[in-house]
Image (cartoon, rainbow, N blue to C red; front, side, top):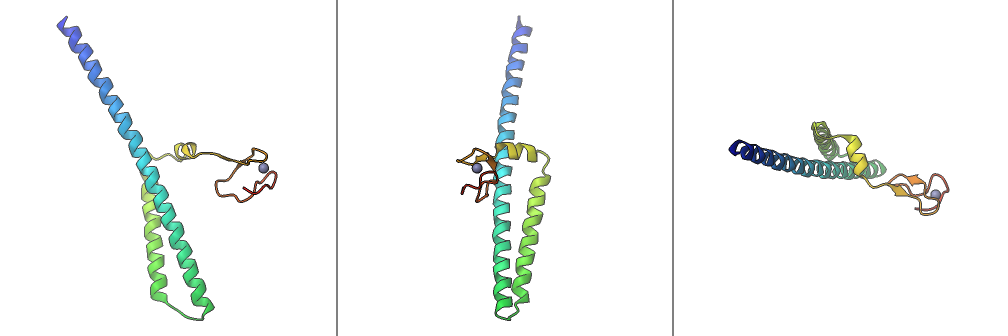
Length: 126
Ligand SMILES: [Zn+2]
């Protein structure tokens, strides 16, 4: 009788622990996803700024190697950060893309890229 009770209690503790682990794992995946998106946004911003800087320098016939180098270093650092986030073992691109909401054309219902301006099937503006 006592033994059974212990077994039941043990089983209860095990279930509670696995539920807790699953919840933490999910929260961790979400955090990793947010980290990755933030880093990718940061990368896109830095690349855009570097592009604008180089464009304005070339256009005005100037040089600012120091500032360009700073941007290049910053971009390299962000890329390394993205690699680090992606290399974390629990990260699976399949799971990440499954979480991403699909976007559809309002005209024809074709699945379209998240950032597409026009539908690839019917040409409707998105
Ligand atoms: Zn369409």
